[in-house]
Amino acid sequence: MPDDLIYDVGQHRGEDTAYYLAKGFRVVAFEANPDLVEACARRFSREIDDGRLTIESGAIAPPDAGEAVTFYRNEMTVWGTTSPDWQERNQKLGRQSGAITLPRLDFAEALRRHQAPYFLKIDVEGADHHILDVIASSGVTPEHISIESEKVDFDVLVEEVDRLVSLGYRRFRAVQQANVVGRRLPVRTLGGGTVVHRFERHGSGPFGDDLDQPWLSRDAVIEDYRRIFRLYRLFGDKSFLRNLPVIGQFVRLGSHFRPYPLPGWYDTHAWRGA
Image (cartoon, rainbow, N blue to C red; front, side):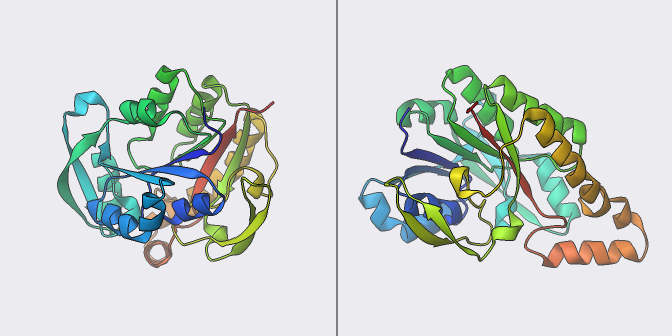
C-alpha cells in the first residue's frame, strides 16, 4: 500500500484534491458529474501532466447496476447522486435535479489498477456502502478513511461505525466540516514541513494529524454522535420543527440559503491505529 496516495472519491470542484496535493500526496480522484470533471481537468492540468493527479470519470455503482447508470445532477452540485432516495430528499429540500446517463465506474477495478490508498475519502451520495463492500472484499484496508455520516437515523449511524470496526478500524472522530470553510490553517506535508492552506467551501476539511481533535474509541464516538443527533432532531432533514407552521418556514429558509443545512455536516474519520 503506497503511503503517498489518497483517493478523493467525490471530487466535486477539487476542494479536497487541492488540499491533498498541497500536502505532497499523489491523488486519484473520482467524479461523476461531467461538468465538474471538465472543470477539475482545467484547474489541475499541471498536476495531471506531472502524474500527481488522475481523474476517474463515471458513476460508481455495483455491477448489477448495468454499464449505464442514471445520475441525478443537482443544482446544488454537491448533492449529485445515483440514488433515487437521495434525489427525492434533495427535491423535498427545494433543490431540483436533472437525470443524465453515465458509464458505470468499476471501483474494484480502479482499486486494483491504482493500488489501495493511504487515505480514502468517501463523499458520494448513494454509493458509499458499495465502496466499503469493495474495500472489504479487497482484503486491503487504507490506514485512514472518512465517510459522510448518517444524519437521520441513529441506528444507521451506529451500523456505519460498526461497519468500520469490522474493516479493522479502532479509532474514530466525528468531524464537523462546516467550521473550517474559508479558514487558513497550517497543514503538515509528506516531507515533514508545514504549509498554510485555505480550506474551500464544500471541502471535507483536514484529516489525520492536521485535525486538532482526539481520537476516540468506538463507544466514545457513538456517544459524541448522540449529542450531534439531538441537534439533527431539532434542525435536520426530518426535524419536527420543520413541520411547525411558522418555525418550520424559518428552518427551511435557513437551510436553503446556508452552504450547509443546520446543524452542519459531519464526517466519520477512522484510523487503524491502536
